Length: 138
Image (cartoon, rainbow, N blue to C red; front, side, top):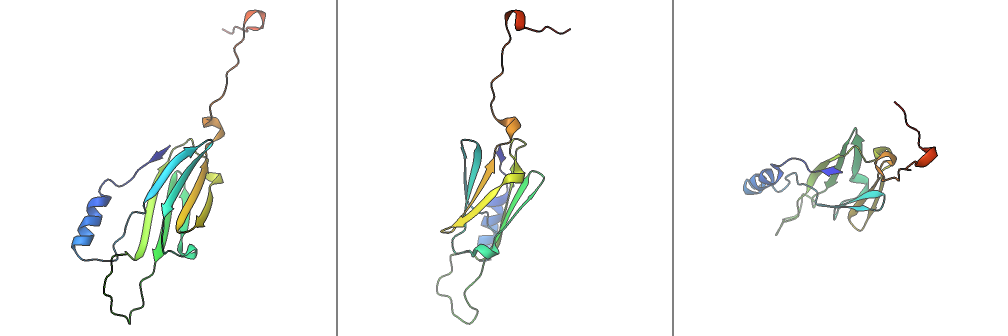
């Protein structure tokens, strides 16, 4: 249903932090779960304006980009632990999801995407014919 990407992402983040680059590209932390007939994905984006979030789907690849601005340049930072800059995350969605009907909402620093399960992927009952109603084809 959902595939994780970029196995070297954590190594890249560690390298960026050790190099002292405070505005490194970071993976957006997510929670994803199935809720009846949809996949729900929550992205943590604290301190990000809704206007700076971009959600795009191309084929089965979902891309979320966001930007957190830095504090004004004319101040002296005492502690800077919150990353700023542009963040992006790509998720590869399975064929059983209906990417044409994705719904997005943003509240309290959490972007929520609701991706419906495609009709052909939903479980269905198969009628069983018996007796005279049974049709045998060769």
